[in-house]
Image (cartoon, rainbow, N blue to C red):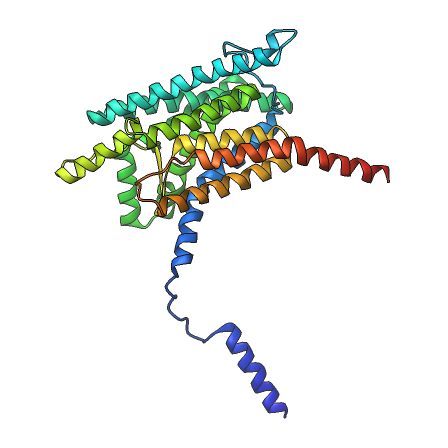
Length: 364
């Protein structure tokens, strides 16, 4: 009986630990592959969410607006002693139309560059925008955080750090010859540091660029942000789905070039996050981060709920794209609508309910 007990025990351990020699890895199922692809697409979104939340919490940003961008728009409620709902709505619509006109101008400019294949001009414009956004965001946030928490920092150290940080980012993202040389060296030598460059540093700078573009929206007044996002949802639907939409024109032009055997316009880095399952624009991730930044200025629970709603919206967009006969579906409407609805529900319903429960608990 003792021998049989030990034999059963050894058989049980063998079933748990497996054979002595490792088996070849099993091929992943379709569900596992799709889950991995979906997770790879969620990484930049999650990184932007974490960084935007940390910035909002570190600088103690408020829904009423924060420096330095809240006073730069034409209409700012803080300039007036009394603000009516009508004037607040009209001023927010004016600010939103002004911001939307900037987005429309950038889109039409990209259509012209795409049509005539002016890739170097496009890279120059993107590199200039990267330099202004990343350097300004880096200098201001580091200086503000150090001043808030009384950390000594001189301008010389900050300037040298910012210069080197932005210079490395420009070379990593936009100097394609340097990136190709490093990738070839990594493949030839098998250097782990160079492989980390190609996988993480490039994507990290793209995430930081997106966060730098989110930062001005996080500083604006709440009504201006929501009005701008509603106008952007309408613009995104019109740009992709209508026959005369600029993004639809780009997709048709790309298909026509592919059928004719012409060379396609290779997108410059920084515009698209390529994944095996889906292509997500930098602008889409940018406005996901804007919604989450507004939630982070309210409470931690609102941040978690809005992040979950945006994730659900992204998954719903992918599901609709895979089951649609269209080549692309706008990535903003579903996720932003869910995020905005959950934001208002958490801000005006859930948070007050939680506060009442906590107040009752303290009284008991």
